[in-house]
Length: 307
Image (cartoon, rainbow, N blue to C red; front, top):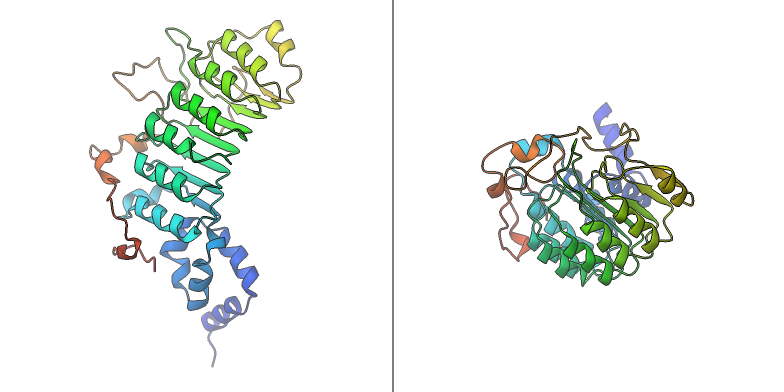
């Protein structure tokens, strides 16, 4: 007699391969590598197809931090499985200089790169990566310690860039404004259509430079950019922008923590951040230490079921 569980399993296995692949593609890389590919030989075969890895989503779920996963090794393995077909990657919290450069070297046709709260990425690594990402169209760098120098390099090396999100934690007040990032964007990214600068220190002068240097802008989000004194002149200058979010506009639909912080000092606190995750433990910096391993076949940790 066939049990309900056996019947349900058989029904899943009887799905056409393209339908199964479509379902599995909706899972994140973590779920595929640690559970989905172990269901059966058919799913394992599908999960090893390079076309399954055109998009890699390494978003960080809260429970992952409580488990002994090496997310950097998992990401490296996912990149290898893509066999150069990677077009879109999202990495949150754990990206390092080595991983970023590896992504660029093995994914020359990458179109979308999203880095969130990756505090260990340096300007030098992003500059080197940018030289290998000439097909990049969308870039998000939210809550990372990246300066104008890296932004300028991205603008020079990525001529197809159409969308940039460069977000920081908003502060109630700043000692002084800074147009460094705004000028870097204005001077090197003339084809931008979409720009989000949440919590940036830019002033009216920086905004005017962006409006002049990026004439193709269709959407602009400068919420919590409180050094911009919004008024009639700026309203008129932004008339051509279809989707405009002003400094004081609502943040209810913003995907991260939009709580305003007191003015910070770079010597005391992170310049940006979105949650308590970076403060969870004193050994955060050691948690995702890059292993330096090059042979991905040896990733047989207790919780990692790759091959």
